[in-house]
Image (cartoon, rainbow, N blue to C red; front, side, top):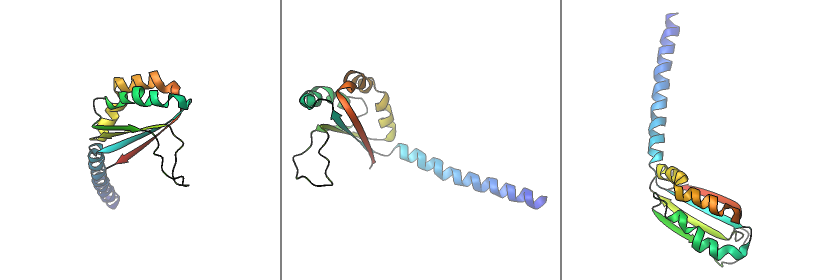
Length: 130
């Protein structure tokens, strides 16, 4: 019985030691800068200019956005690996994952979704840790 208690005691210590680095890593990751890229496929491509100049800039005005860039597909050569099918994209830079999470709840971000979501058929987001 004593060896089982000793084993369980050592198991508890080992488990606690394994959890500590995971918690530390999770805290550090929350502080890691990141890039949030959003691609929009619009229902009506005739609305591209309006969406680019009036709608999307709202996202750049959200409190936790560090840098904001918006644009349309570049007129690069047609290749199998290049996707020119979307109409508008924006790239938002955040100082941390926490800032990006705050952005998701920002009143301007929520207003943008409510006001303009009917304009797009598809939206894709790519988040990049830097």
